[in-house]
Length: 135
Length: 277
Length: 142
Ligand SMILES: Nc1ncnc2c1ncn2[C@@H]1O[C@H](COP(=O)(O)OP(=O)(O)O)[C@@H](O)[C@H]1O
Ligand SMILES: [Mg+2]
Image 1 (cartoon, chains in turn green, blue, yellow):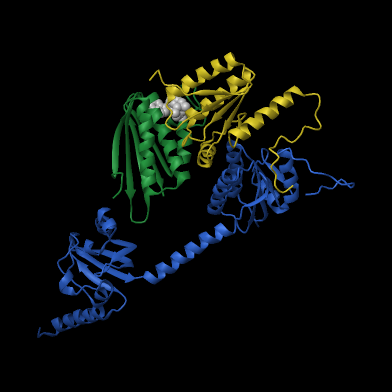
Image 2 (cartoon, protein in one colour):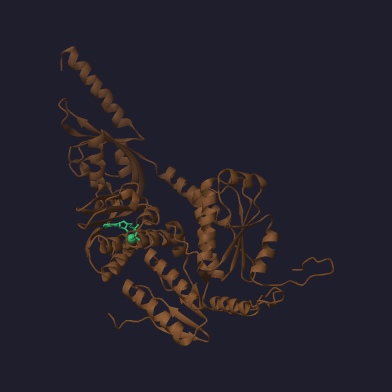
């Protein structure tokens, strides 16, 4: 019935994976019927966080699932890597903070694009970011 | 059942039985710990069209839509009832003839003295009419929002959106999206958002307005807000809303002049220096 | 991969680049390099970056657009980003990425008009008052 299954996992190592992650997120958003604006917000957040995985985390995995609760429906995505981790999360979450001289809007920006945002990271161990967008 | 004690007990049971049997509006029935139907009553039969012998021993999920079955809604509801002692919810259920009705349900878990789950009691009501009325109200609300935000083409390339009535966060969002898509659809370089018909503006709404302007700018259009009433101007300043980067005009006609100016359109002027449209 | 290019088309004194959906980072960087080279070799006075075919702009692409605009400006060619979809605009604003200083237009036509106007203004700094309406004049209600 639905083109997308309930959940998908993909490895994210290269730029081609980045494009795939965006496509995957879009198909989940379309399947849920998020509406174009929210769909674009979700895909953009997924793009930011997948790029972080690849650029800062040395690659990792992207997990996307459709959530159907009795009274609400949404999409959750988890980005996980075993890279260097983030020593100071508060700093990383600040607008404009970047260790690579890029815009530093990936983390704080994607937080503003979704309904729920959670980041867990330990220096030397890795980083996990979980986002949820409710319909 | 001869001694008086058990007579009382049975009369309590009888009273309870009468209550359940005669209940016209509430389907009341028991479930096993794994969700199989144990008892049935008249109201349940009336709502779901199944007779007692057709359902007893069957799993509760038979009344749920295929979609809900796939989503494991029954399991979720029973788990919740088990965890919290009680689950309250609503959803579409399927009658024997395949038609649907909107059920409002309460599921309570039953436990023995040691806290072991012995089953559930489910109390349900057919609230289809109420649900349909709510749907109508919601639809009318949406239509009203649509209708109350017309997009008018004032000039080639100039749009006006006069907003009348309360602007809450939800409506601002709709207005924002409507304005931006109207800009694309009409190939309009300037859009005037007139808020003279808006009684108050709070921080959230003011922020939505700012974001709308910024988004329009990114698309290559200008947005002018007109009709900011003195009270709203005061509120905005008090709220610390920075309108610095935003074009505001007191009236729609001033906004139109500005819009024409942006488009480099010059109007013929008569002796008094008044502009003809 | 390295054979991939984004076509840069010359239109009068301007360059037109149409960025397609699914653009990846390396291609975007290649574009930045090739475009600046082309501005230099053609002496173009303006660049139109048509992004109407894009369904998403994240901070990487947003930054790239700003960077291209800054570089071409130094080379005396203004860049106009044209055709951003409303959903993308809303998303960028929500993210906090508003690309200050980047010129924008609704479509390629309007972008050209904007570039021409800025060029003529630059040429005629001394005569301000009566610049003719460059608006396409099709105002059907006048
Ligand atoms: N997955 C990650 N692993 C390690 N560090 C990260 C990760 N994600 C983000 N960071 C750190 O947080 C900073 C801010 O990230 P972000 O807001 O996306 O900005 P940017 O990617 O532009 O630098 C990064 O510069 C980097 O130092
Ligand atoms: Mg980033």
